[in-house]
Image (cartoon, rainbow, N blue to C red):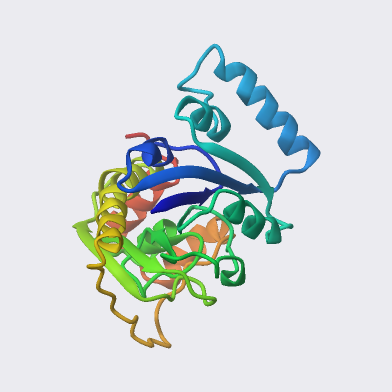
Length: 246
């Protein structure tokens, strides 16, 4: 089963892609490849030759682990289908990237899955960690689900719950959910698909499920007031936003 990951950049989860079950073969970096973005990417690649861990890139990671690498402009997503056919992909994993229309994934024998940092159907959208703190949730987790046209609404394949830690930065919380919990959940799901033993649960149609849209962080004080966040909750939010040090 030949697996392709679609993501928008490098992090500690992406750096483990080559260790997944089945056959990881390529990464598509889906981003805004403007001139300024390409220059920054080139500078990062050059610096990566000296400070490999701090300034590594998806491209250099793929080169190191003999994976195909494709840079695809987020405004030209139709190219995704071309690249998937080029490497005979059987399955796609999306992770921290722009929305990928399912019409470009229809040729995949084993379908497509996404890792989302919330317990779906709650907190669908691009900024789930922020909104979970705004709502003061005590329990968080990750969901691996099938991709459908509606955002983060596909059948659930695996869900892992964990108590949300207090007074941690966004980076620490993201690492807990995506790297320490999420990667294992992805591996379990890929193995289950490979063994034809995957089970799915249709997400309940909760019209009142909390959403997690991007672009609202600048109003965090107003949102905290609106949702009745207490003193401890505000403190957690300040650590998350980097307004307090760990």
